[in-house]
Image (cartoon, rainbow, N blue to C red; front, side):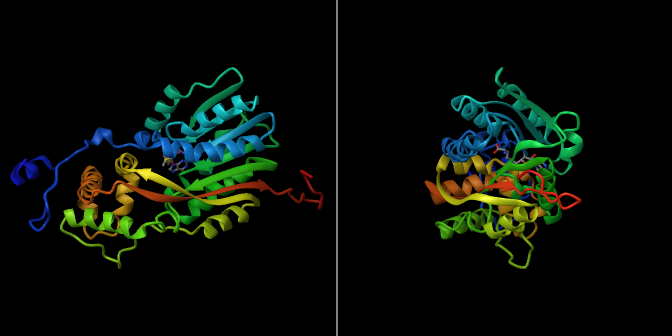
Amino acid sequence: MNNAEIRATTSFQIPPEAKPFPRIVTENELNYKEFSQQPEYVQANRELISNFVKRLPDNFRHVDIATGTGLIPQLIIDEAIKENKTGIIFGIDPNVTSLNMAKINVRGTDKVRVEFIEGMGQDLKQLLKGKIPPEGVDGVGILDALHEIKNDEDKISVVNSMADILKPEGLFVFNSAFTTMGGSKEGMTWGRWKSKAMELFGRKRDRSIQAMPIHSPEEYRKIIENAGLNPVYERLKIVMLTQASLEAISKYPAFSTGVLEDMPGQESIPIVDKCNAMINALRSLDIKGLPRVWDEIIAEKSATIGPSGTIFGK
Ligand SMILES: C[S@@+](CC[C@H](N)C(=O)[O-])C[C@H]1O[C@@H](n2cnc3c(N)ncnc32)[C@H](O)[C@@H]1O
C-alpha cells in the first residue's frame, strides 16, 4: 500500500506531519474478549482464583463484580469442581454486550450455578435483593477492573458496596495490572511503545495534560482496608505478555484510549484509530513481548462491632 492508499483507508484527517499507518482492526473487533483468552492472562487469573476458591467454604455464594465476558466465573467453576465444592456465582457488569457473551460461554453446572446480572458495582445490595441471604455472601471479587472505574469516589463506593454484602470473615479478591507498578519492568519499552503510537499521529506526550490517574498498590490496599477488609494475602506477580497479547490488549478501547490520554487533541481521534496506532507502533518497534506486574490481594472482612458493642462474626 502506498501512502495515499493508506491515508484513504484511515477514518480521520491525519495531520501532514503524521506518518500514515494502515488500519489493521475494524470497530467491531474492539473488545476485551481476545485479551481475556490469552493463555498468560488466563493463567495469571487462574492462579489467584485457585488460591481464593481453596479458602471458600464447601458450599459458597460468590459475587464477581465487573465480570465482563465471564472468564472469572468460569475459573471459579473449574476450581470449585477440582475442590469438590458446590456454590452459586453472580456475575455483575453494566456492559450488556459482554454479559451476553458471558451468558453464552459460561453455563455453570448442577453443582456450581452461575447467574449474570446487568448493573454497577456500586449498587450490589439493590441488584442482589432477594437473591442473597441477609447475613451476606462468602466471597466477592473484582478482577482486572477496579483501575478502570475512573474516579476515586466510585472506586471507593464499589469496594464499600462489595464489603457491605460480604459476611463477617467473608473473603474479597482483587487484582490489577494497572497500578504504578504495572509497567515497572522494562518501563522504557512500555514508554517507547506509547511514544511511537503518538508519533504516528504526529504528536508527543504533553505532561501538563491530566492522564488517567494510576494508583499504587499501597493506595489500593488502603481503599480495601478502609472498607473493613484485612489483607490475608498480597503479592506483586510478573507476567510475561507475548506479542499476541499486546496486540489483543490494544484492541481493548479502555487500554488504548488510556495510554493515549495525555496526547494533545486525542479527544477528536476515533477510538478505532487509537487502537490501530497502538498495534502499528508495536509492530514497527518489533516488540516481541513485555513483562507486566499484577498486584493481587485477598482480604477478609473484619468481625463488625454491633450497636451494643457486641462482636458479630467471631
Ligand atoms: C477489563 S474488563 C475485566 C473483565 C473481567 N473481570 C475479566 O477479567 O475478564 C473491565 C470490566 O469492568 C466493567 N465495569 C466498568 N465500570 C464498572 C462498574 N462501575 N461496576 C461494575 N463493572 C464495571 C466493564 O464493563 C468491563 O466489563
